Every structure is written in C-alpha cells, then in structure tokens.
Image (cartoon, one colour):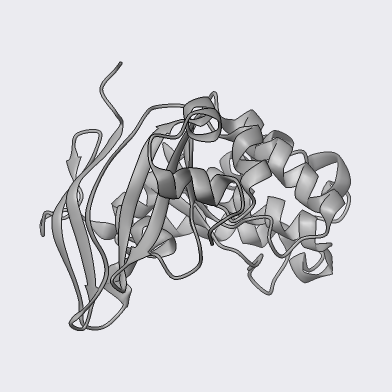
Length: 256
C-alpha cells in the first residue's frame, strides 16, 4: 500500500488533565474517504480537530504523539496553523455560513489569504460553486444573503468555502446530521464525488452512510472513560469480517 498522506502515531489529546483519547495510530491515504465511527463521546471529533490544530483554540489542551500530513510535522511549534488550515479544511455538523452574501462567503477567505484581484476571485468562486453543484442554483443571486439558502445549500456553500482555498484534505464532522434526508443525500453524493481530488475524513454516526461512501473505516470507543481506536480497516472488511468482537457488536447494533 502507498504511503499515507496523513499519519498519526500514538496521538493523545487532553482537555485540562482529562484525556479525550489516547494512543491513536492511524493512516489516512490520499484521495480516499476515511470514516470515523463509534458512539458519542469517544473522541472522534476531538481527533479530527487535532489534524489542523483547531485544538489550539481551546484553552488548556495538551497533545502528545505525532501527526504528519505530507511533509508537514503538524505539531511542530514552527508549523503555521493558518497555513495548515488552508491545506486542511473543516466542515462542521451544522451549516455555518457567514451572515453576508453568497459571493462574500467565498471571497472573504480568498482575500484573507492574499488574493485581491476581483476577476481572479470571480473565476475561483464560479468554478468552486460548479464543483459543489450550486452554481446553477445561485448564479443569479450571488449578492443575496447566504442565510436565505436552504440547509442543504448552506452546507454545500460551506464545503465550497473550504474548497475555494484549494486544500488537500477536507475534515467533515457529521456534515449531514442536521439536514433532511433529501438534502443529506445531495451532500453525501457530493462528498463521494470529491474523493478523486481530495483526501476526506468524515465523522459519522450513520453506519449505512459510512458503508456507502467510505474506503476505510476506524471504530472509536470509550474504554475506562477514555477514547480509543478499536479497529481500522477497509470498509468491506470492517462491515463483513470485523476482527474485533466489539466491532462486530457495534456493526450489528448490539452495542452503542
């Protein structure tokens, strides 16, 4: 198998003195979708937050272990978190567009990262909205509030806002859980289609969704009050021939 784009080694995260998870060693491969599954409170979202150092924004957190993304040592104090987050974007559970126009939602991050030319910005915005399937829906109202969009459209706009910076990696924290079934299906299809151009890590409680879209799956669990990685493998192995009894119980609905 090829070298993973992302590799964590014995990664542990502590909030104050309380461990969120410990000793997570996990490879994530280029242009694949890795699903993190498991019950609530077992460290999946916290793990995701470590990958682009959003944990830096939480007081009194401590990380130990190692994270490499490509040639970047993520936890090296010399690593620039802003540059890292341009390379590794995040999509949250609830759509969170900025409270201004659709156009400004995408222009804002571009300008923040030094792109000032209006023609260049317009081209990048149109291309990105086309890539998430929104262009035809919003091209005639780019100057209207992003808050006027439906929930599913808002989530696709948030994905576009991350993609407009041309990241390598997209982290998605339950991106469909706040959406109705139709909107959820549209966003899920979009995530699947992004696989060929981006490396995606998705937290999901929807096992059917994980089986539909993931290439690889990692089961997290709470053991003695601490998040742990129970099993990692390709999606067919996890769902049809799990190695761990706990994985089999969770997949079959007997646990969790």
